[in-house]
Length: 297
Image 1: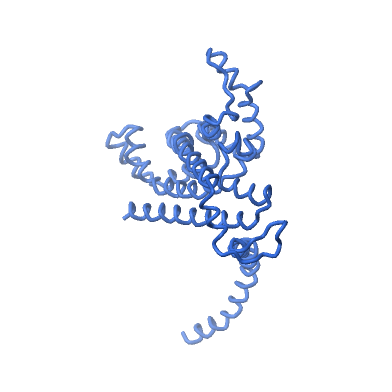
Image 2: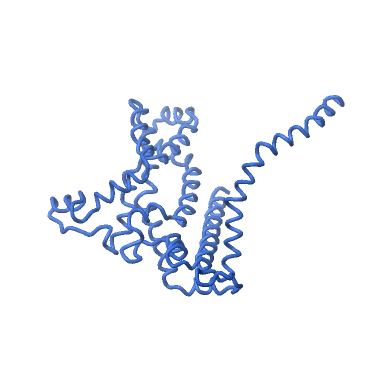
């Protein structure tokens, strides 16, 4: 036993060296590209830095006061929240339902799963181009369908009342990697439980609602928390679809931060916006995690 313990002690320096060699670069890059920008952004939020004033003089909480007093900031926060709520209503539940239904299919299960997941392999910008064509008020398919139904044509992405809903409607088609995630959770359910339910006479709907759905609830909670944190950082899809328009009707809070920094060149105020968004994201995500733990207990 003493010889074994001594041998382990001799291997520990080599093990530590291997850990440093393999994990060190990743940790260094993570700090340089994640934590350093965050810390530098915090520093920038307390100074004044514009092209006309590069001295970076300390201004305290002035940038934060300007942020909270800005009506546009709260408009963009509201836009972000509304888009997320519409996403929950129109899109979030679709992959869940699709995965539950696919799990009940025996013949051709793999083919159907492949067809639903295939769109995830298409670059996101291709989808943006297609949907911009569909919603085009002049020659888009959406207005052609409205014409066939004898309904008035709409501006779609150009209508402040419709633009947020139009942005999330494509999610009704579902598909993508979300189905794979939920199907993986469904496949982890013991076959013995399913077979016992079948023997007891439970039909497909009862098995789905009483057994499968409760057993994948943990994955739904995880996906919801990820959706909350992602929605607060919504930028690329909305920017590519609408550039935040019409007016500020679809401008998210991260887009506002981008415009503040790279269109208005008010870098310090943009940094203050980013810190506020980070804090909001942290608080909302922490609250969601706490509620999830309370439900688990």
